[in-house]
Length: 454
Image 1 (spheres, one colour):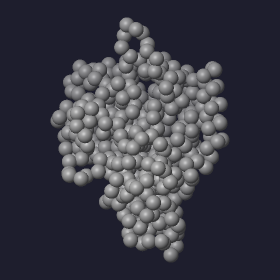
Image 2 (tube, helix red, strand yellow):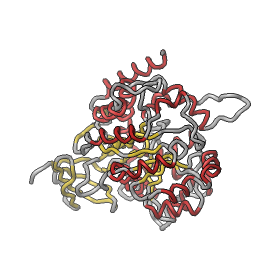
Image 3 (spheres, one colour):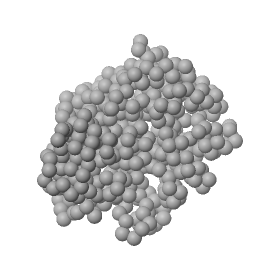
Image 4 (spheres, one colour):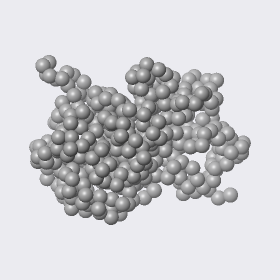
């Protein structure tokens, strides 16, 4: 038998738990998966899970996490919009080297938490003064190199960002480095496509309806490049955004998008926090992924996604860490459920059948939506071998079995339980340590200290 062979006592799959699972890998992919094959192959561990895709990331924001938690003016309310000004000021100092240092450290943290793919929603295109770098792709290439160094799969989503609001006003001074016209944007995407590999996908990102005029949106979506990969967009994150869209375009943002674009399973609607009932059903019918980021949405005071009605409509979801105030799929899924419990004043909101596991449901749902939004094949035969092995020795897993393991993983505290991480058939984390952790952390510290002193 060719290829590497591994054995898991219990392997979680989209069809549920497989006992005594044997996996055969070739060139980083799963080419055979059998049940009831005890003792065959290198033992992975007692509980093995598919790695989780992180479907929304602004990598540079990890370096400012926790630095926007002081109240602003005593006479006004802090909000997403006041936080955004702090973020713009921080972003204004970051160049390619700093971005690579920050992103690499972040991606190491993601891997250690159980993320094995990241969708990088990337809009720091130019120099801080707004002028393009000598290589217009320099900042994108810094992200690609960061993912390569860390060993995480990357779905790179260069962002089209053209206007400062629904009235199509010019970008502000702090936004100038984000800006790009449609033709320059498509040239960037075309050049990056040539670098695609099993570890790199390139997709389209429209920053938001307020930042992309209707004609530009149509031009991008008409391009052959837009038919080759996934499409992500921020949408309906803030109440004021919804109100401005109604005033400018005569419809709520999600309703407008559904009516003016062929939204399908290639789309990821990031946040989509403020939906009316017809929009909930429309998104679910389209097959688009709702890209939910509960820890960031809570940190920014965005609101709570209408999860219960969305699931009743058979909608697809995934999770992302967005601003990276937290880097943990466990915490994203936990707070996705907890937010609904606080609204309903009930427990176990995301499941309906007697005896169903909330943890299993959430992990499975986020795997499905995350793979779709990342442009990856669902876990199984032919998919990339992205696996996380939980720590057999942890007291939190004492007396646990497949029936209650995922519930314990998600809801039993904050002790890290990920021991080993494999991406594309290669070990990148062993015994809770990344293969290049010290060097990457040292470079990150130096970069952040230089930014702070500058």
